[in-house]
Amino acid sequence: MIPEEIELQAIKCQLSLYEFFKQAWEQIEGSTFFKDGYHIQMICEHLEALQKREIKNLLINVPPRTSKTSLISIAFPAWVWTHSPHEKFMYASYAQSLSLKHSVDCRRLIQSPWYQMFFKHSFRLMKDQNTKGRFDNDKRGYRISTSVNGSVTGEGASILICDDPNNTRFVESKAIRESALEWWTKAWSTRLNDKKNDCRIVVQQRSHERDVSGYIIANDNAKEWEKLILPMEFEKVRTCVTSLGSDWRKDEGELLWPDQIGSRELTSLKNDLGSTYAISGQLQQRPSPTTGGIIKRDWFLKYTKKIYPKFTLILQSWDTAISDKPTSAYSACTTWGVFKDEDDVKKVILLSVWRGRVLYPDLRKRAQRLYKNYLDTGETSDAT
Figure 1 (cartoon, rainbow, N blue to C red):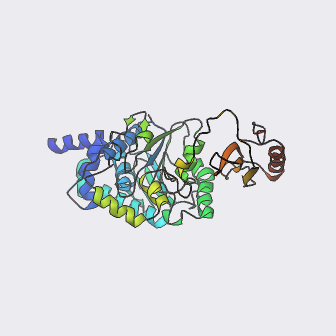
Figure 2: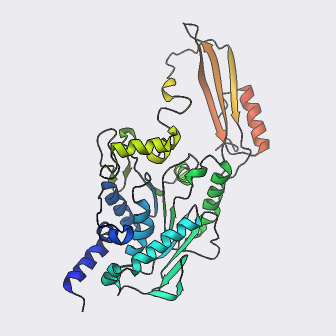
Figure 3: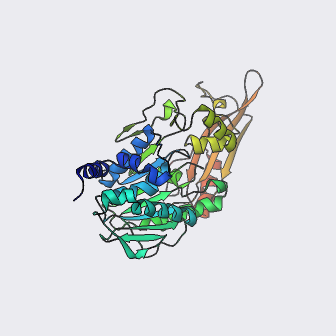
């Protein structure tokens, strides 16, 4: 017989991922002191909705050191198995060693006396499939670990989770970024067992406009993804709103988790990151600084006069990619008019913009068209 108090505690944990995470904290982190945060509660609510299939695709962007991995990669699958042990998980991170560590930590939580006291009757781990990279239970559920560009052939899952698919150390490497996107679109995207009912989660700190999160945001034309984006310092103009609620903060600059990362700790963290781009991406979840990096945003003004000034020069700037793959970078052309204002200061006006994913023949035709008429940017077969 299970004591009534233990049974009530088990039910309480089964019903609430947040409650489960609080009670499991000591098993996960080795500390009895749990520092609560509204962001933890908000992430838990979205993960619960996903487990119930109320959300199919969930993107979570939060700063480093905010317990995202402890919650999503370690606690979440262990919690799901307390009432749905048939769920099949596949996890990926940018490094196999990192994925394996998360897998081992999750298995240790499941095998802990605390977990077994509450949930030992929900399932058993199988002895014949119980390794660092994969462990199964006797209800046909499993948790498989792999890495970006790691082999996933022949495997599938009901819940796919990417925890930091991009390594922030190699953020400037275009080859590594594009390789991650190739893996995301061609390998990982095919691993769902049932596309109508199964789910995907991506959680990471932003590092570049072309990281996996950036690709999802830029290409979510069908609005398939729920986007939970929580910056370290609150920005009113970017208040996160999802189907389950919105960022709870009201004051500009209000911190995400002040009990853990206060003003002093944030200053130290910014000093460690150094780069304006790293701070903007990893802390604020927008890889481009609001004020601009080299070129400042407040340099750009709206030209309000009805007639253009007399241009001394009209020039075009091209950035070509010469590829029409959905994951490739865009080819782009901007046309600028150079003039002098009343104070004889040289300035420029942006006259037109075109971008598209095209092969060389179409790119050449587009360049000829824009040379003849820079306003000829209408959509054709070679523009996207």
